[in-house]
Amino acid sequence: MDKIGQALKNNSEIMKSRVTRPAVYGTSIAVIALVLATLLSAYLASGKITLYTIMRAQKTNFTLWILDIMPFVFAFWGQYVSSIMAFEASAMVIDQTEELRNQAASLEHQAMHAATHDSLTNLPNRILLRDRLEQALHIAQREGKILAFFLLDIDHFKEINDTLGHYNGDRLLNSIALRLRSMVRESDTLARLGGDEFAILLPVIKEKNNVLVIVEKIQQSLSSPFSLEGINLDVQASIGIAVAPENGKDVDTIIQRADVAMYVAKQNNKGYAVYSPELDQHSPKRLTLMGELRQAIENDDLVLYYQPQIDIKTNKIIGVEALVRWQHNKHGMIFPDEFISLAERTGLIKQLSVWVLKKALAQTEQWHKKNLKLKVAVNISPVTLLDPDLPEIITGQLAAVNLDPRFITVEITEGSVIKDPQLALDILIRIGKMGIEISIDDFGTGYSSLAYLKKLPVKELKIDKSFVMDMIKDESDAVIVKSTIDLAHNMGLKVVAEGVENREIVERLKKMNCDILQGYHYSRPLSVADFESWLKSHGRL
Ligand code: C2E
Ligand code: CA
Ligand code: CA
Image (cartoon, rainbow, N blue to C red; front, side):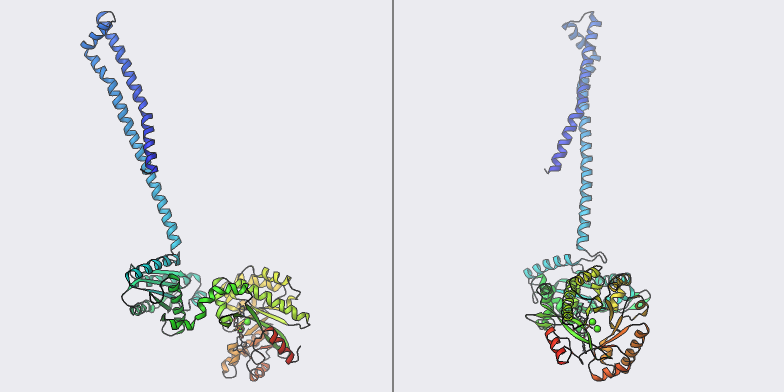
């Protein structure tokens, strides 16, 4: 018997013993009444009370016989009633305990559900998926079966989210989840891993080629447009597939391999890829880099390169843009395009931004000490810009150096402002008040909305290199460059053209009244040592 059962038994024993007391009183009263009645009866019959007259009264008076039974009746009745009450009370306690137990179990179930399911789509989440994948891998291995794992990433979801808003983005994810759910079987697992990433686990497939049938089904299920706010949206997914045991036998390997395949699928035009070891060549670093970036920041394995910016009128170098690189002991030099987005996704971007700011300011201070009054431009990614700590971080870094804030520019992109305009504006105003200049990078590629540009404390526009590089060949690019320069000047802003690759571009930009030039025509981004030799050879140091 368990503890609760034992407690119930004890309780009912105690209750029984308490309720028996009235039975004892009843019996005692019956006995007293019987004795008195017998004595009275003996006295009335013979005028005296002796043993003999008492015996005679008991033998001859039938009413006394009824009284004789009463103590037994009381005893039995008392005991019986108390037993029933004790039983009912304990049954009540058992019922209530059962209900409490059920409630506790249901709460536990709810908590368990929340921990293992995605709150938006109610699909299993990453945790449950890993658990199911682990079990399925065991079973597949034991029974010699093939298992298939699909990773799905919705193409261009970010743009949809940015344009139509989070509410509609969420609605779209729900509709996608519904369609996907209708095509998987009960025994399969469809999970949402977060953002626009889904996964499908098929615990058993007959042969590897069957994955192609599933891919077709997935693509089919997404093929008809989704209707949102009266707009018909075409949605496509990139699907990466790994099968076990061929591609791996443990959870991490299978997920990583599907991730590599998905990365390849994003670039090929089929929309899917099945993992094979050759695919690793397309993203050999992707796997290892994720784990190594934190270490690289801590170990100072990153390095800043500097690309000069030239004043178009004086032909003098007025500043540099700091561009980060990663000197990897195995993969050699890794360019920021390969790890900035990784840093953003893993949350390391904050540390990276702090590192870049610190190094860039310290280096610029060094140059100023040598009487080389250069400005320095630092790139701030959208995630960093929307971090409310950013102004404090910059203040802290500024305090560590002896540098006039007017020599510092932060380059931000339009996209980061659009994400949360109010927060971005607050932060930019605080940064602007420190005397730091703000420049809009990659201008022309994003939303290019003038409405918000007017509100921001911006000093400079940087025309994206894609327009500048092609402005000689492509007249429409030249028109964009020209009108951007005019527009910026009308708003009282300076204009930097990046991607200046040759003399013709320089000449054309001079005619267009551009202010500052940056590009391979002058110099590629250079390490500190190379930059200083470049300055010397150009008679600037
Ligand atoms: P960006 O800010 O647009 O930087 C300019 C990029 O254009 C640099 O690439 C530079 O090497 C390249 N470039 C400069 N002149 C020319 C040219 O004449 N022709 C061509 N074809 N390219 C030119 P890089 O250094 O690979 O940086 C790529 C991007 O990575 C940057 O684009 C920036 O968005 C990001 N990035 C670089 N450093 C940092 C950093 O410290 N923090 C953050 N958050 N992002 C960074
Ligand atoms: Ca930049
Ligand atoms: Ca740029």
